[in-house]
Structures are given as structure tokens and as C-alpha cells.
Image 1: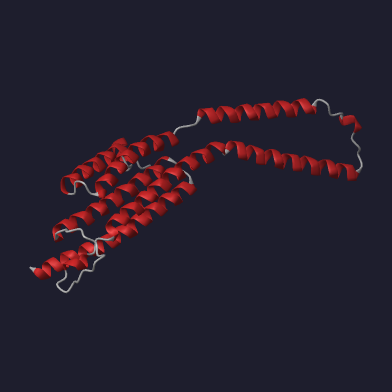
Image 2: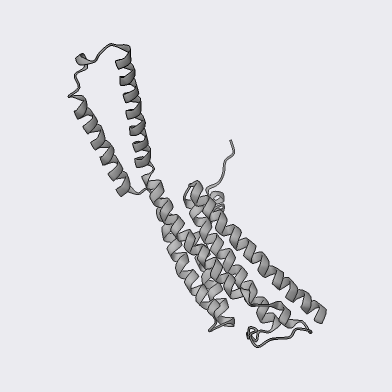
Length: 243
């Protein structure tokens, strides 16, 4: 059997603290170069969100003893009620006719099915509660991805082309070619780190719905980052041509 060292297992998992430190360093880098711009506010917001995600994702990995106690009490109470009602049943009065027996079996099957559905509902209560919390946070991360995309949306590399003509309503960023490349690169890093925060939920909660939602956030961030790198490629190519 394959033996895996504990340190290797640890290296195969995302570390929330490392992600937070990376985001904090990125915030400092962005603030050094683009102080006063909206992208700094995004970094600050992402730092706060990352700390919340760390706590929340770890909590979702732990058992919710309050809900488990509630479900256990309900199951115990239901069992006691079932036993109590059973004491009033007089089995000597049951008819032995075939039609009566079939009706009795049908009623027993229906009761068992209803009890089984109730048990499934109660047992899955904790999973559904955690899933709702995780999906709420993932929705917030998806919104952050779209906000990051809005900040890079108006960064047009064509402004550095020799035949580019601005209009009255053209964006007035006054970026140099190097600054625009750095700005776009920072946006790409923010998208990647947001996707990593989403991945913490899939890592700490084994639920198909949550995993699919995490994959959606990661795919969205990847597709938007691909658009950013197309802009960077245009800027780098134009720089080579100019030189």
C-alpha cells in the first residue's frame, strides 16, 4: 500500500493563511504603484473577505453540534411517540381476510416511506444548512470577480497605437505602457486569488452543489483573466515593435 507522508498531504491542500498573506502583499504592491485608485479598495475588500472565508470554510468542516442535538431530540421524540401509539393497538381485532391484510400492508408501507423521507430530511438538515452558508459566500466572491473585471474593462491597449484617435468620452487614465501592463497584471492576480478563496470551500466541504459553484467561480475568473492577458500580449507586442 502506498504510504504518504503527513507533510506531503499538507502540501496538497490550500493554506488559507498563505492566501491571506499573498493578498496582503498584493495590496501593498498595488498601493505603492496605484495609490488612490479604485483597485486599492478592491484589494482591501479582498483582504477582509479572505479572513472571513478562512473562518467560515473551517467552520463548515466542523460538525454543527446544535443541529445534531436538535435532530437527535426530534428522532428520539418521534420514536417515543411511535412506541406510545403502538401500545393502544389491539392486534387481536385485526381481520385475517385477504383484502384487510393487503390494506394493512399498504398502510405500513406508506408509513415507512413517510418516516424514511422524514429521516432523510432531518439527517440532511446540517448539510443543507452548511451548503446555504457556503453558496452565500461564493455568490459574494463571484460578485468580486465581476467588480475586478469592471476595473480592467476600460483599459484599452489600443491607446498606444500610433494611429489611435481619442474622443471626448474616451477614458482618461494617463497610464504609461508599463503602468497599464502592471495594472492589468494586478487585476489578473486578484482574479486568481479570488478563485483560490472559492476553492477553500470545495476543499473543506464535500458537497456536489458547493463544488459545482466553486468550479463556476474558478471558470469565470479564468475566462476573465484570459481576456486580460490578451490585452497584456498586445501591449508587450506593441512594445517590441516600438523598440
